[in-house]
Length: 414
Ligand code: LLP
Image (tube, rainbow, N blue to C red; front, top):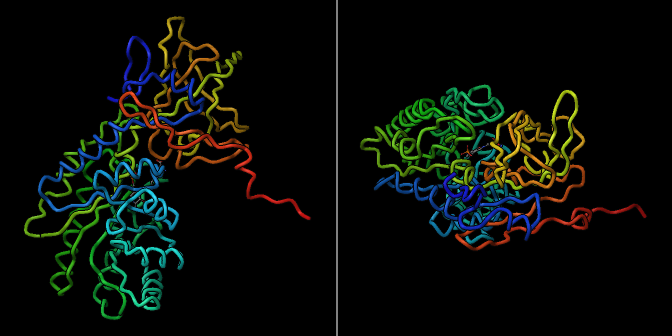
């Protein structure tokens, strides 16, 4: 976490002490590092060297408009999965011509919104969706640019909830069927089949499944082009893993090289849709210890962040490193780090060896991806504030929610 480092036993985000942020903005609070975000983007961008490419940041990983705007300024495109995400991208100054629209359940109004915005491409996940998109585009006197999302049937060897490229998953179109649909392209008067897409899963720590998928995709491109179809781009999805604990994911450079290897004479623009690997280790969740509770069985540290703020531990049993903001000197105990929500599943970490007192600050690391974006208001807990640190500046990029905001849309019967 090179942007989050200890100085004199105190944890900093770039040049700002986390204590200062807690003091000014309260806890729980998400903290992102501008330099870390920029570095991650540039690492992807430069790894492609001269190969034509477009990085489409997967908005779902962290959709704060300040984050989107930062990537837009660096030249990034975006992978969206809803009309709402499209609105965010546009509000953040993103270029609609660099937007791809993924997802198995696009609704008519979302299709219309994306066609009106003139996005780069729809990643279509079923024949039924293709038929509907053709009809919507025809009614609007437009042509919809399309990649079929092919399900390459490779095992991503990741958590089953985030594995998407096996034939039993709900995602994509089996290769044979995709081939048939491309071959019948002429039937779809208002579709321009311009690309090919796949995404096999998330938090992959091995290159092999990516390579298998890429090979299958290149072969398919070759077969389609033999039939006279012109494919402009190949979208190879997202999924590169990050280090949460002791994982050893491939470097961004090696990952991109593996995707581009053996591209040979195929002059295709490569698109990728990284989410986690761009933002995951650029953010942390800052929380304060409210109570220590020692029972004969266990030691609990009850903190002010909970499963509604960071759902990943409760949902996937995911591991996030938890660091003390001030390194303590006393005796180390084995703690269960839990939140105030009324569920046994409400934990941020189990069996963490820490020296703690109530009032201490803790940093839950690697929380930049699928943290705030998956948060909820369960237990009527207003969502956390979000700040971006840029060297020695702190910017509030999302105010802490108020309970009034939570109830604003609700109504009592007359
Ligand atoms: N493209 C598509 C079509 C996707 O479905 C996803 C993620 C991505 C790109 C970005 O994948 P990434 O580079 O972030 O791995 N909530 C889970 C992760 C769900 C991923 C869903 N799809 C978690 O917290 O681990």
